[in-house]
Image (cartoon, rainbow, N blue to C red; front, side, top):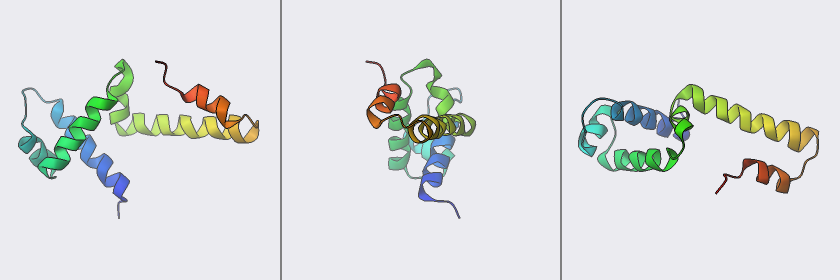
Length: 99
């Protein structure tokens, strides 16, 4: 049985794949492609647009890219935060998005 997070990521992946098809799809068509509601499709598209502000952002929309960045995040916390005792303020600086 899938968790709620897994269900949402699955819908997001299907929406992202549908957005990659040629032509412009309506939210109703996207919802049908992803087997979800129109409002859910709208929220997913908004989320994808918010996340895709960097050239490499599309990688995060794929399962492999998501797993890589997740593993990188937790490995960084384990190695530097737990094993080497670097504080949360320094880790926060490392993970901060440059503005």
